[in-house]
Image (cartoon, rainbow, N blue to C red; front, top):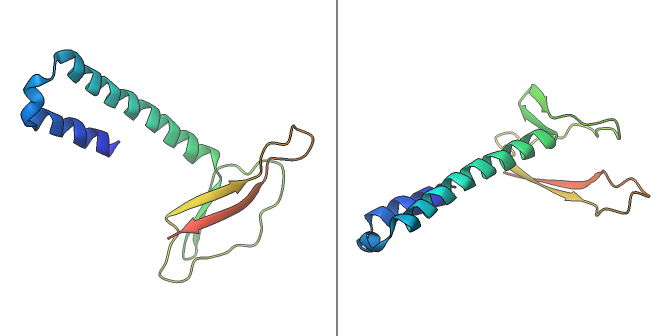
Length: 111
């Protein structure tokens, strides 16, 4: 999203900007607005659909809803002076509904 905004501003300052027709320029601007709208939607869906626990020292807040299946494991804390800045989830493939395929198989935190 930042790259799109940066690119569209530089197009207007470039030496070949005079060769752009209004249609091309309008297309670039409408594409930028389209991406902003749908990237924001994807961000909101990601944030509200994945339960994540954020902790800083002794203060803990739980974000998201864990559902009715399964139990949380023991709390694991980052080493002092570090923090989790992102995560990657490993989820098992869909198995035709015959087995429980709703679990996260692993989560990797990055700092």
